[in-house]
Image 1: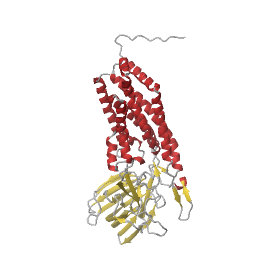
Image 2: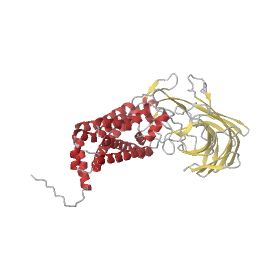
Image 3: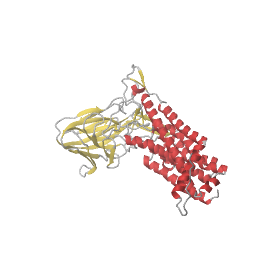
Length: 538
């Protein structure tokens, strides 16, 4: 048997580092000896995982191959989407009037008009006109212009310069890259001239208002472009989506659209071996978000081209081309588990005031700021550990269930997957620390718990289920709920018509910008708590 001996502290020895370690250990002992808090954290993990699995399997997708075909469900209905050069799932459907370009060259054209139809729901019966019932109007991201592509296979590398419905001239390449050119819409009184040139793997796009004075819109290098590419004019128009305020949240209605562009003054330079133009409805099929209608008419050097679909990255949500889901969707249950975390965080400080134990704590460690820091580290650390376990389990069990139900899970790179899982755990940890700061400020359990829920949980709940999309977006920019953006795996592409929907993993701020907003709230709350606990009596 041995006896532990504690060495006496030397006079004048520094207390900071040793003192904080002792304070940290004391707070950890307090936390783990309160059975209710430990149970609450376990419950938070279970709720997150179980609700995530339930949400992943709550929708079963059905389909039918032909009017008399058997009814299929689950994986048999999962669309096959093309994969772009950078590994992202894409939509790649448009009407293409083309010629082979064997080597270097350029094509120039004037776009005289861009008109469209939208709002139909496609054919209901065999032989019905897919454009029946549509309204006149061009959707904002309808596109028509010039394109160079390695092949007509969906997902191929490409570069294009184009006019759009409401976003002016753009140069886009390889689906995820977008650069703005001349502003304004195309009209008969205000046409746009476009030029696309190739020099080896380098593609450059230009625009002009008069065909004489040209401006560079963008330039890119498509590595590995074959010697002979396909080049010409195209037209396409994405899903038309309308979001209107409802009694709870927003109501979204979607349908295909059609774009028709008038081209004239077409001229080519360089190695164009073919003497005639060929029209193709590229990428049309069950996964294409369009009417399936495409055509062109030629009169001299003038063309009328009509097409439907999109050339863009695939996203989840109401504006998606089909049944898709994102990597983070199984984390839907995190919101419910977070309630237990913030309740524990708020009570971690207030319970000592309620029971009068705060005097003992401060007698053992009179540095109140250090006590606050120790409680924040312990609460945040426990919340981080619980959240990362919950996130790993929810995603590991939820993603296969989503796929089995027939939903296409959008692929993301491994670093993004790691950022979603670890970032989610960091977000939960910071929200626990925010709750600790609120508890230190208010000192009363009921008030602190209510305030923590109102500050941390309520804004997200209102944004997702109650408020119109515009008001909900502002809540998710300005409140601690902005931190949920760290879960977003698919970027907010400016060239994609996507309805704001946190339930589908879409947030108004980028992941790290939203996380920074949460960090700012935590810093301010801790600073306020530190000032108040130093000024008040225990």
